[in-house]
Image 1 (cartoon, rainbow, N blue to C red):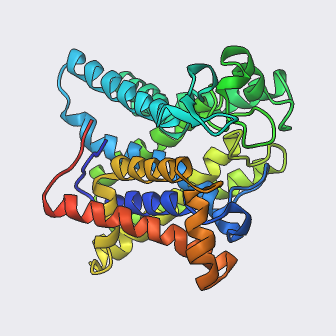
Image 2 (spheres, rainbow, N blue to C red; image 1 turned 120 degrees about the vertical axis):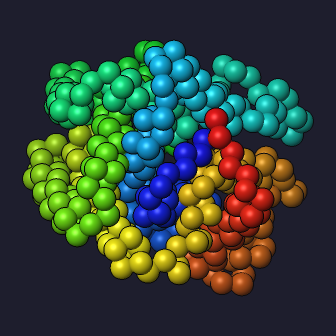
Length: 368
């Protein structure tokens, strides 16, 4: 889904998040990855933890331009439900792809639905986009802010009432286990736990609403010093609020805690205000095209990168997955473990950028 807008700074921020998403998802080895390019193990925050909520934030930014063009309730509902469904299904089938796996004897067998993960990054984007769109459409700006506050406070109360904040005892895990079953959940945390689960999708809606409200503010007041100042002040206050609340309710990406939402929205406001100052006010644009390319076909390039990873993990050289074989036989000997792993990720980014560059030159923008 590509949503083009009329603000270059927003387009660059969207491209920046896609670049980081690709880099953090495609290292040669997660065992030898620079620590800022890894998620926090549980409580805490890294550069990588900033990426996903920022992509939701820029989706909200773009919605402030695109939803205003939709006339009529039927057209609006058809648009948001269709987009949400398609994005969700793409995310689900991406987990199921290539629909085959190697059995115990090394023979290819069908990959059963019974063990396919249901929720993930694209699925969260789809659901958060749907819920946020409905709130934005049918509530005033003031009411949208109030609903956002209720969501964040309510989510904290739900987590406190139905579990604790540990990996094994949180309410997000309990609901997913009851609703989906462990076979349909992510298993990369050592137990069945989905960092993009059902309950934790609720606070992620606020990241999109915050992006939408920011976009509306930029549209109304323009890319001016006053706009930048207001965004910087509010962003700083939200960061301080998130850090203060973190003393009682930890910032946690995998639980998508309310403090995590507030903290990341604060950072987003600061980063976007800096981009507006540099790009829109100072007119320093010579460096932006790299990120513009990624920002014009964001979800397509993200899906392309993930499909490439899936295929490299699927094919094998001897008893080693092709993904790891390339790293251990090319990048690791050339540049060492950590730098080689980073260069591997940059190669994946470069390939995706070249695809985006070709699409941009041909004026092809893939929409849903």
